[in-house]
Length: 202
Image (cartoon, rainbow, N blue to C red; front, side, top):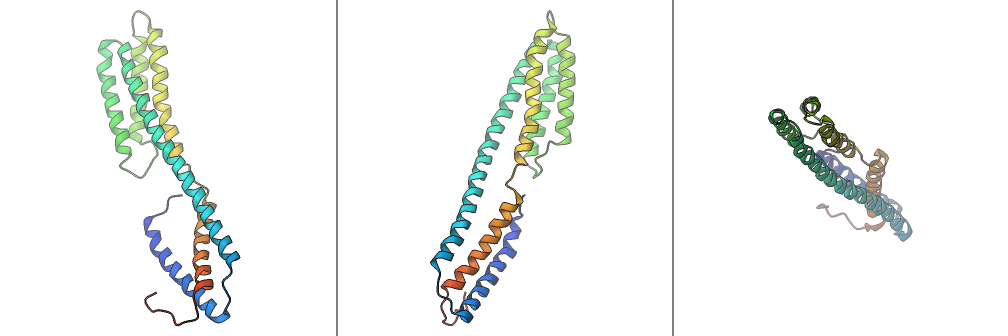
């Protein structure tokens, strides 16, 4: 789940509303502060935040690792094009350059799926490489056994990265964290605001 930054605007006003509701509840009931309720409330809120940030850091590290893995996969496949006949290498190397450009352009958008252009270039690279490997002399199998597995790794890493970007905590965690945050604001004001007249600046 990806939240828009503009969601913080209504959230801010909801927090103010709950603070005011907590203040009025305290004024009417005159309840004394309860350390047990406060501790349990904020402990649960802190626990949810800790797990959320811990998971976010782990996923961020995994994304950085996958970027390096994709770079290494493309580099390995590109260098193994040397096994192909010389006359077949230039067009395939150009397809590789176009493919790298399409992958770099993917980061300028918020969509982490593999673009149609990248898919098209993947198919072209695979088709041209298979045809060129079969023309290798004196032993076509040497180019096939070395080049094609490297190409397969280069193509598979895109799906791995897409799945990694789509892995997020369950929606229930975000909903529970938001609800706990709002409840914490109401409880804080309910148990800590005095009976004195409210300062109009707050």
